[in-house]
Image 1 (cartoon, helix red, strand yellow):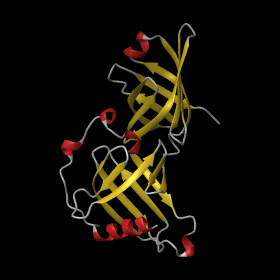
Image 2 (cartoon, rainbow, N blue to C red):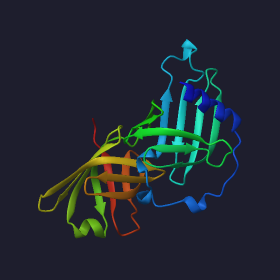
Image 3 (spheres, rainbow, N blue to C red):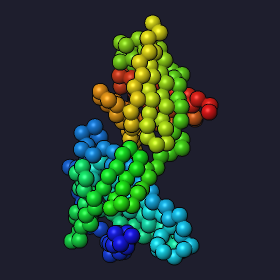
Image 4 (tube, rainbow, N blue to C red):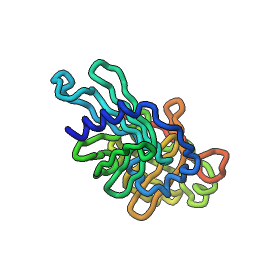
Length: 225
């Protein structure tokens, strides 16, 4: 893993990166060019005691404001960090564009796997969010206008979702696709469109939308598995 050696060496040289004003980079998640890159990506050393690689785990975080952060847990459990700015297109990512030695990697990815120069990272998701959810309370003008009476949402750990709504006449509509999150934002991507909302988890319930916005607000209970 020659690229990984360089990866780690770069971090040791750039633990303290320059501060950059990223306010102008902040944007709506649905307008981000490569949304499936966003999130926390993990690489775990399957044989840390072999001595072949000087790390136990690596966490790479990519944000929509083009900030990145890398945490490398070494064999002695100490952690090296590198953070800064990145750029990406459909097949190349540049880490440390704000440094004198930016690192360029070719990549391929889907909603939960990221291959950097042939080394595969897996996207992590909170266990609290993953699972099957069914509506306990629905409110808001958007849902009322469509006469929605039931909502079910399945969020798989591999970032695949199934979304089902039923109206008061018993007519159902189902969408399936992939999703991603950042902060308290949840975006569902499906064949003919996308839907973005905010979410929060409280007392074992998933709440979608803002109850004060008037648009859509849903409280969903976790379905026992």
